[in-house]
Length: 93
Image 1 (cartoon, rainbow, N blue to C red):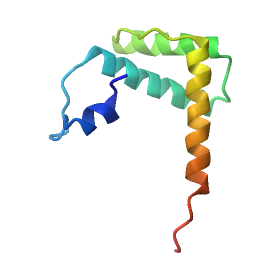
Image 2: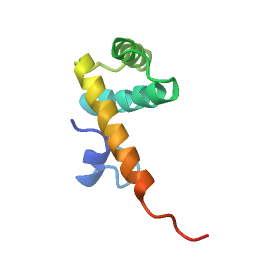
Image 3: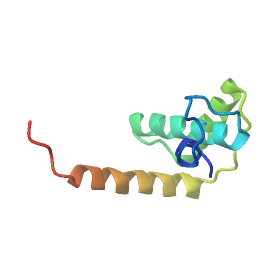
C-alpha cells in the first residue's frame, strides 16, 4: 500500500507537506495502531482491527480492509525487522 515511505521515495513531501490521499491516511492510522499493538502486549488480532477502526473514525479516515491474517503477517514482519535491527553491530561510544 502507498504510505509515507512509498510517497517519500517517489519524491513527494520534499517541502514537508504531502497532499491528502485516502489510502495513505489509512496506512498511517494502521502504523499508529500497530505501534499501540506492540506497546500493549499484542492483544487478539480482532481487537487490533477494532482499534484501527476506532482510530480511523477519530481521525475522519476511511479504513482499509484488514483481516486477522493481515495483522498476524504485519506482526511477523515487525518481528523480523526488529531481529535484523538488533543484530546490527553497535557503534563504539
